[in-house]
Amino acid sequence: MSAAAELVIQDLRKVFFPRTVNEVMALKDVSLRVAPGDFITIIGSNGSGKSTLLNTIAGTLPATSGTLILDGQDITKLSEHRRAKFIGRVFQDPRAGTAPSMSIQENMAMAYLRGRRRGLGPGVPRRIKSRMRERLAELDMGLEDRLTSQVNKLSGGQRQAMSLLMATVAEPRMLLLDEHTAALDPKVAATIMELTGKIVNDSHMTTMMVTHNMEIALQWGNRLIMMHAGRIILDLAKEQKALLTVPDLVNKFHEASGETLAIDSMLLE
Amino acid sequence: MVQTVLLSALQQGLLYGFMVLGVYLTFRVLDFPDLTVDGSLALGGAVTAIIITSGGSPWLATVAGTASGLAAGYATGLLHLLLKSGDSNFTNYGPKLLAGILLMTSLYTVNLRVMHGSNIPLLRKETVFDQLSHWFGKSMTGWWVVLVLVVLMLLVKFVLDWFLHTEVGLAMQATGDNEQMLRSLGVNTNVVRVLALGLANALVALSGSLVAQFQGFADVGMGIGTIVAGLAGVIIGEVLFGVRSVRWVLFSVIGGSIVYRLLIAVSLRLGIAPTDLKLFTAVLVVVALALPTVRKKVIRT
Ligand SMILES: Nc1ncnc2c1ncn2[C@@H]1O[C@H](COP(=O)(O)OP(=O)(O)O)[C@@H](O)[C@H]1O
Ligand SMILES: [Mg+2]
Image 1: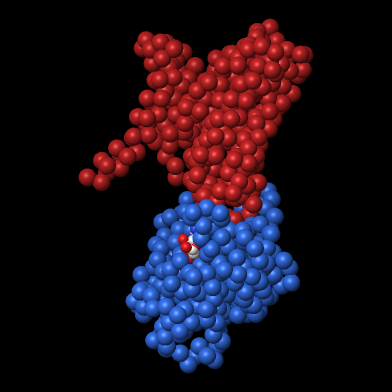
Image 2: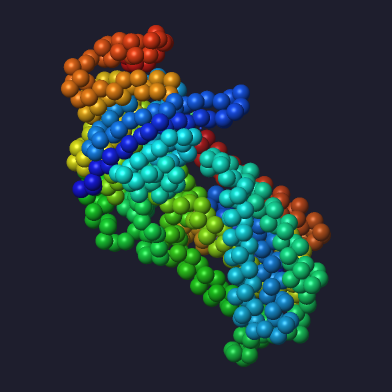
């Protein structure tokens, strides 16, 4: 079992195209303490900065200012691949999490080596194949019998299930999920969400999950954050969250943002 | 006559086959259309020739020629990093093409400097082929050359098979396949790309070294058109022999290299002027590129 990470975000700011007419401040000095083992669901309208927040935490995007402290270590200046030792990710596009022209076992083997030095040992060592099969069998998709199939032969749901497994097999201390069920049809999305819940509960890794679905945001996790225009405008603990319904959440949004935006349809879907 | 055409195609196809493997590595495995190869092929020939004419061992000269390609590939990789810095778009080919063009152009000057001129004859010098002749007591011409080259090619091919399936090798494959994923698994894809470009250009330079020793001279212009010839080999190989796995496709592109040289030899016989060959090759690439789509269309209807 991996140790769950504590993440302290201080005055995190992200500006795109600074000092140009296209300047966008996507994160406006966001501060947040993510406790070890937290499973935070994140909602907010389009363009509110949810993806930018996760991208800055993961190091895909450098922060303009502010600091990120992971388990006491300042990771603000650490490169993306170094942070990946501690942070696993799944993206919205099922194609993003796997190498399409490589085989299932090659993809899995690369995931087992997360954050480790790669040498001249066999890329798919025999000793990890049985572990790999076991984990794939848990997906209940028959992938354990197709180890040498190319990943691009798989369906979107299968690829996303594999992405989830690949993000977590090496037990990083933190998991970042960015609308990772949004591109799937509802039934498959539900399967992937169940799988996510199981993996997070089994490993207790600290998790931040962006979703566009308010019901999912209420149903899963122990904490809910709402973002608007680059800020966190609502931060609900487990007990508060448990009492809320989707319409309550929409009202909260209006109160907190002081705006009635045309996002209600999105929020209520 | 058929036999001489076939023989020459096999010799040329194998001599340039290492280069085609290098082009396959960059274009297909790494998704990096690397134009350095025109320069690094000639560099391999130039370094080899200067060492041999200075009295060095031809084996040392071959190794040094190959290593010079390694260095050229590293240079392209590092220059690419400089050119793309701050750009997070992984599929941006601009910096890749520019890095290759800049290296290719710089290497032209480097090659002139290395050779102290534009040409070095090796006619009465001891090459690796001459040494092999002494060892085996067979004159290294005709089919004997083919045999030696086949053995060397198989050796390189199997080492490459092994390497591409090591931990680092899988990372090389994944860098071209899904770079963002590989980074989020903790791999410094920048380093991997530089290493792979070095390896690819080392193979290209090995071809240059062997070609110079086989034809008996190194010339600053010997690399011109390498990129197109390499692509022709890769594409012809893929179309004719298929791409079912990495191990298989390495055979395919070696086959492609031989078929390409066969097409060249035949077209020369049929009266195409040597000066028209480059255009001929370009057209060949376009036709071969069109083929798979043609094939798919045929299958669909
Ligand atoms: N790579 C980028 N370059 C420029 N602007 C960006 C980039 N990514 C996001 N933005 C801008 O930052 C703001 C927040 O975007 P994002 O974080 O993607 O929102 P969300 O994920 O909440 O929909 C938007 O205005 C968006 O246009
Ligand atoms: Mg987003």
